[in-house]
Length: 124
Image 1: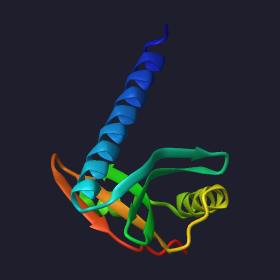
Image 2: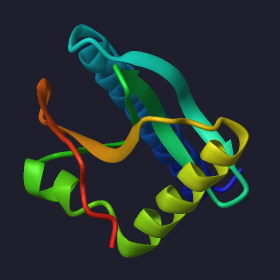
Image 3: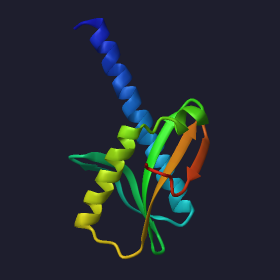
Image 4: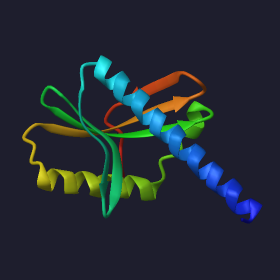
């Protein structure tokens, strides 16, 4: 097999597991803050939502971003991703009606253990 393809596969697997563990850490963090995790890795034809959580009468759609620095993590959510995120949330709500408040959050992870939860992000 071509060594370049092997290297690409390794990088892809490393990115997958890095993202997977970042989402698990974010879920545990939210659980400790009193949220109930309803879904993780909710996939739709229009996009994916990393975590769907509920606290009281608020339903949160959560995007998780892990990068080397907080700035890189913050700017990792592109306009295209925001649009897919919003569309996926709409599809979730069509199949799971919710009477309370809904909001979009982001959890940023950087370094080895740094984490920041930003509530009610603007998706415009």
